[in-house]
Length: 108
Image 1 (cartoon, rainbow, N blue to C red):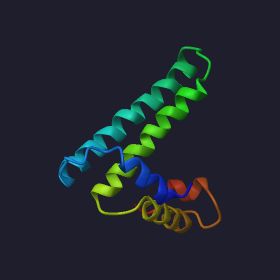
Image 2: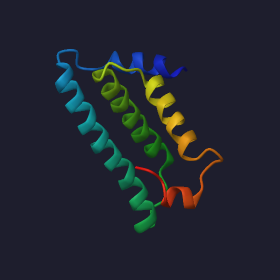
Image 3: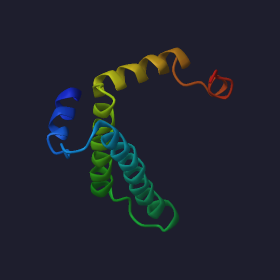
Image 4: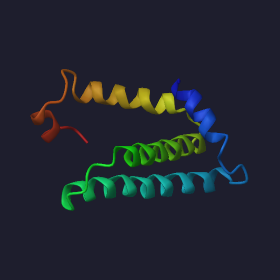
């Protein structure tokens, strides 16, 4: 599946009655909430000795992706643009791959 195809399919399940402002608010709140669910799964694994629940983690990561798609759409951009911009930023920051010193001394 292509990135923008995912976004289109995900958005077909979005509440179409939301204004772009409300869509943006819903998207970023959803990102925060679902990210919290992701870390809770990892916390239970690391701090409570639960087995790492891969299936549940995949499900919650999918929810993060859904809200990312909604947030990008609220801004009028594609997920592909988000991902391409991120890779361009990372290439500038770490042209030879991750480097601890570049991480510590990077420009904000």
